[in-house]
Image (cartoon, rainbow, N blue to C red; front, side):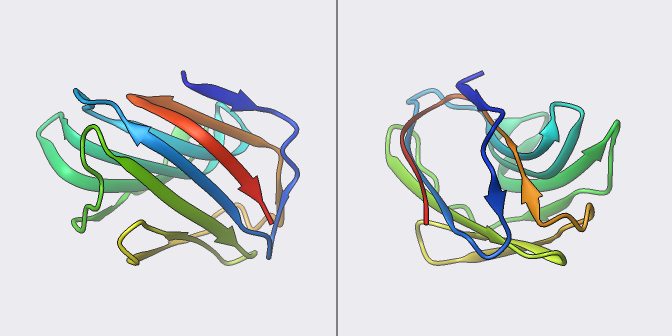
Length: 132
């Protein structure tokens, strides 16, 4: 676990920007928004090479059990390099704007407009997190 914030207060219409660096031997990392570790509304999971999934971003949600995942093959992340991802959402969708300008749209399966729990896990370091 890189870090957890349990009183985030991330609201619909706001933007949360995370800047960090991918570790040189990174296999996988994730950025997760929700209520807690078992109730994740948006699981953003870049995979360099794990479980046969190579250079793919996997997105999902979890209410006790994982739901149907969505996979994206555009992959701007590089080992040992800095990254920046900006997240926004509304009651229908999450949006993740990537370093290269690509945008991921993922359904807000919870339909909630405030999330207090954020956790980042895996082979990254986070240098800044800014909510605007």
